[in-house]
Image (cartoon, rainbow, N blue to C red; front, side, top):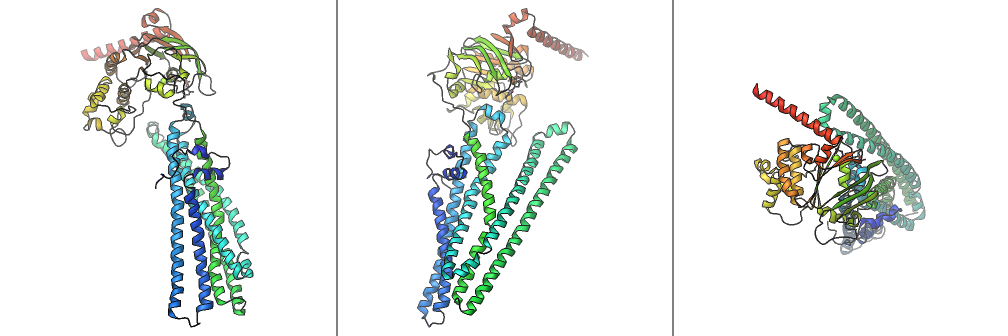
Length: 606
Ligand code: DCP
Ligand code: MG
């Protein structure tokens, strides 16, 4: 399936419309011509089919028994074959072109969504459930695809078949034409109302289905918690209840279907029976010819049977329209402008950072950071210390402009942060996140992630050594080519953190942020990393968030945060000289370590 004939600059954003049919039409850009071709082919196929019956009529009434020679009979036979081939060919073309439009549009939409979702802000992702995004980029896109492939084209087919055959019968005999559509309004009304009810049941069923999947997914992800709290029986019971509910709803849905098709069969059957009987009487009376009767009997089928599907298609179309809305709700979201900003320096930043009375809150929530003011010279290190929830991560997340501060000012090298384009800032700032995420790719790919240029093995090894993970990686049978994740090795929390540190170091950023980057690492390894980092941190402005005093005491500036405010600030010696949280934490940690030391010695001497 190619999308080469789609205009390259087309973005589904252009298809955002409050008129959903119009929006769906716009979404087809680049494929509209093929789609119109598909509908035209449908028409040609329908004409060929009807022409077959008219030829049959001619054959019965005007050819049979009139003593035509063999060559002429052959010609008529050839006509039948030609019409059948034509009908087949154009049906095929119509199906193929409709499918191509549907697949091409869906392919483009899925690609766009993937791209777009990655460009939405942190704030958007904070508020949006992953499952919701997943569903919209898969099953809702699928519903839009079906709209083009099945429903719109199906509706066209019904209308064209109806029109062509009705006109043909009308020209043969008006009474027959009227007779053959008597039941049609009843059929349409019944099926429309019926499928309206089906669609409500279908929605209920889908919702229940989503609940079952959510429960399943949650229990798979949280299986350790379930086991640890010995809640298996409880969870299984819950799941079975939801699953039973789904079963019941599915049964009711099927019941509706199994009621509709037979009853509509009876309606359509009665209609045809009436047509056959009355048409038969007319033929016997000589009102119509035998050929007309035969042609009528053939054509009327193509009026009645497709009609039974009308209600189904109209109702299904409404699901396509709803899905269009659900997809467009994401498309409508503004992307985080990455390159927007008036100040883009040629080279690297120096790394002087000044916070002046900065205030910040997530969305409409209460203030997470209040009156934050401090100053860091290029190349200095800043340590952030504070209880959990005090705002440390929030503070450092302002630097790459993951979130925008509400008040005050932050300057980098004397220029307001908001003047810098986000992509530039992010190329200058390396961040090791609190809960680093590794992709299910090889360790080498994970470490070199985000570096555009070719990187040599030596560089990768150097970064890994600095993060004290090189030896560990080399101990794996496949070394740096080992896959991470479910199909490869499972790394421990501390190993993951160290791979993430290597990944950030390789990018060689001017500003380095380590958000609790060594929290899952033992004291000894942490010491190793700290010493390696000390060399790497030289000349770069560094932010270190840590809970151990040892990791922060060498910093040029220590900020002690409490409930979003800086309560103490200074160097280790200054803070030790004052009363306050810092000294308390210091003494607490020192005492714990002493006790540990004593216990260790006690066990050794025993
Ligand atoms: N918060 C929020 N929305 C987010 C992230 C955090 O509302 N997307 C809230 C939760 C806390 C406050 O902000 O009340 C500060 O959270 P931080 O993550 O900044 O806290 P710390 O990093 O200091 O805590 P920890 O040591 O646990 O990492
Ligand atoms: Mg944090």
